[in-house]
Length: 115
Length: 106
Image (cartoon, rainbow over all chains, first blue to last red; front, side):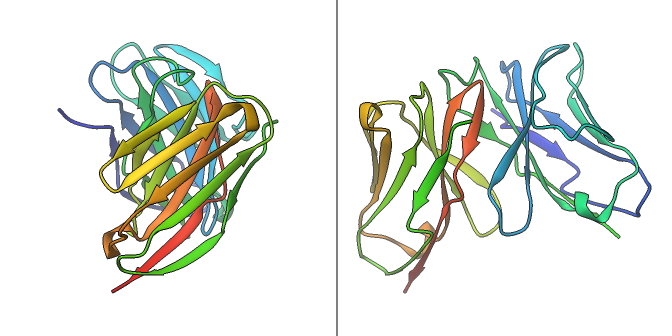
């Protein structure tokens, strides 16, 4: 029973390039959450999605960042025109129900380095 | 928004010792979870515990929702317990505390 799968594990991009991070939730889970962890800091909520819908994007930067969770396929977090400050670990989590009343399960994260 | 404070920020233990980690939150919540981030960066869900007490092996957790705090107990600590322990609260989105960094020495 596969857990939350994220890829790639490590991603290196030059300033100005695009970064695409993928997340496949646990089997049977339809709720996906993205979090960002800067060095030596805790996890900051970015966005909460259900299939084809963005439920809460209050933690997403206003520019350059977008997320989707299509009917088929993984959830994608897209960062356009990356800058050095985007270097961080990006974690995806999923739950079988809204996280109002069910546990979150995290993937192993994608470590983004912007050079 | 909800504020989450964890204490202590750092903790060094000798193998075999017991410890208590605390999480205070500023508003009533219907969801509270504890996570362990190991030295390789993996996040493991330890407990989903909006109220009451749960135990899993050497770990147990208690949440007193009316008083807005939760405690994580680690007994007979082992070196593999090292890492950062996060408390997260909320509903819909979870808000994480800053964590307690635990180091267990052999």
